[in-house]
Length: 284
Image 1 (tube, rainbow, N blue to C red):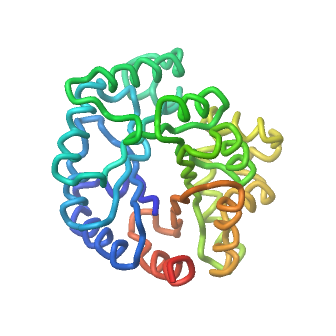
Image 2: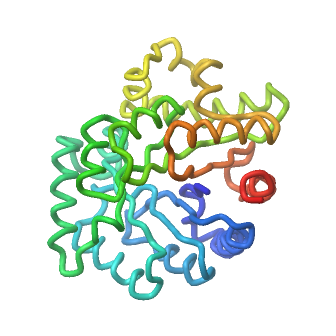
């Protein structure tokens, strides 16, 4: 499952811990959460791991503009010492509009910055091993780097066609774990409203829009929150069978695991019923 930034909020911490326990009981293997790190390594990671016994946790994705590699590596080492093998560090370059607006720095040479960050993780006092980190990767250079300098890639906001491209770029061994948002809603008007509100913000970010253009989508597809055709390949929606079929397309395209993000009309509640429905179909 993919949890998002909402999981990091102190205001809903108890609900998040309860939700994580239920995910474990339902049989999910890993929870991906939005990265954070603006004010230090999120304490919620340790709390979520402490609240569960087998559920693994991945940061999806910590921005490399947020914290220096030494601090990141120390935090990862602390989690590894307390919860061996259960935390996977995900790092990414974020997006120019986000970094320029919020990080008080300039979004320049993101690929080179990632290489330097990985170098820093390698030489930190407590290095982060290659097999305990993944990269947010969309384009060919970052996918190649994911195979060479990390355990694999965690692409976000991608259709199955990109999963196929990513698998070819990575090769057969590295982890490929795309995020896939879904809407368990059979009313088409409602489902498209939920999906389009989610899509609108991401389509405004050049890394995502340029990635979709590489796959052949046009400006018309990306306008006004996205075309229906783009929505149908990006966000499986409908009844349970339709949603599961959309998820399975990513496995057929080469994904090792799919980080499923359940979208609802209220993005500030935990979609527990969706977790249960998908568990009944995917994990039985």
